[in-house]
Image 1 (tube, rainbow, N blue to C red):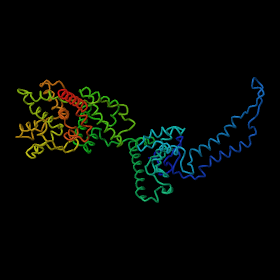
Image 2 (image 1 turned 180 degrees about the horizontal axis):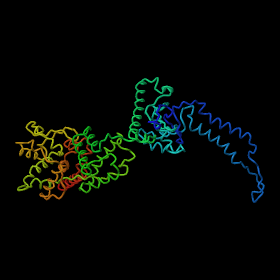
Image 3 (image 1 turned 45 degrees about the vertical axis):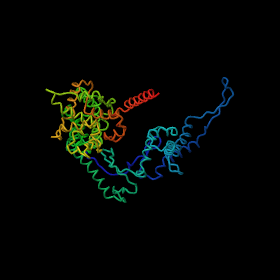
Image 4 (image 1 turned 120 degrees about the vertical axis):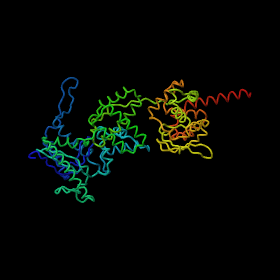
Amino acid sequence: MGEDIIDMDLNMEGGRKETDEEGKEIAAGTDRSASEQTAPYEAEAAGTEQHIEDDEEIPQLIMEHSGEESGKIRSIQHLDGMYQKWFLDYASYVILERAVPYVNDGLKPVQRRILHSMRELDDGRYNKVANIIGNTMKYHPHGDSSIYETLVVLAQDFKKGMALVQVEAYLNRRKIYFSTKIYLKPEQWDTKRRMVKGHPNADVLNRMLYEHIAAIEQIELGLWQQGKSISLELLKDSIDKPVSNGRSFLTFFREEVANSSLKESTRQNHLSTLELLQEFKKEVQFTDLTFEFVSSFDNYLQSKGYHLNTIAKHMKHLKRYVNVAINKDYMDVQKYAFRKYKIKSVEGRHSHLSPEELHKLEDLQLGGKYAKLQKTKDSFLFCCYAGLRYSDFTNLTSANIVEFQQETWLIYKSVKTGIEVRLPLYLLFEGKGIEILQRYKDDLDSFFKLKDNSNINKELNLLAGLAKIDKRVSFHTARHTNATLLLYSGANITTVQKLLGHKSVKTTQVYANIMDITVVRDLEKTASSKNNNRYKS
């Protein structure tokens, strides 16, 4: 490769950097002796002292002869003398009071201030780093960046007193360093042989180091074979550039979903986002995922008539896999689209059927061209009586209907939460759910098989229109109706929680509109109690 060959070597001179309060970096793991490190300061000090001794013009005394100040004496000091005298004081202050740990506790002033501040903030809870930095600023006059960097060093006990082993690449008298992410104590590094020594895993570490060098050299060889002019900048860019192995983002998205531990229902939701991305653009590369692309995809979903919260759901899915791609070095974090793009949503409102609306749907007679909607109507009403999700209903079989002591129970495991739910159908809504099952007893398994959720919801809205119900209806409306009507009839909220299979009662409160129902029920009880007392008197 002629003169363009880059020489590479291992060293510890580019070890871990520590910072003082001013943010200046101090190399760790260097091989300089203490005398070499302090020599410049001693030389400066000595020179300064000699100059002061030779200076014959220390402050002059002069007489003022003009105006009201006439006859008064004031001191004058020349600028060069001030610089020479005060610089030594400042240099000593920087070395002794900021950069060098105190002999009594081994702490630098910024470290001591941080620990004091953390003690002040300690209340048994976790504190944000920003809070610690803000409180330390009361005691530390040198800026927040030095406090932050010092916090990082304090938190990494395993790196204290250790130096980073780096690969040194040099070309035409210029150098560049690549981290190996291996930290060693200075005595564990053989400077002459450029290898690890005296470490319990010395053989493994040495193999890792030379494999690291080989990988860099392989990249250099590839650049040379492409006919590119070799430079240190080009080598660094080639190493830092994420490698996608020729896969598109869509392929990566599909593989991540397939290999994830997501529940089946969640996996299908994520795949629905992937399908929309493919509709929007057949091939999506990692470099395509810019702010403009994400914004355009948002506009595309709006044009298809999706609700704002539905768009937010798909955008969250997209953001998730963009983050995974960045973590796996397929994308550059500096080009992160979601730094500028903000996902917008509105608070969801859960609709439910009132008792009157439920009766309208129950009494709806379907004939002619609408007869085919009978199964959709029955399945929706059954979910109203049992409080089932669409996913739970479509996963039922005849085996889930159990006769216990001559009574009918529905026993199933929730697809979403994995919780086993036991429903006494004979006690819910006067056993209306059992009446529906009787109509399909000859082929009960087929009753639980429905169209996809999107199409079934379209049919439900058609049924709502036929029943003169003026609201949008979805399969989830059935579950919300179940919770609302049970609470209205006097059922305890914890009982409803168990019937719906919720892990937390807070979820039940959201679904059941508990506040409105509680107010209505309490007012009815109060009114009834007053009427009874009036008649008694």
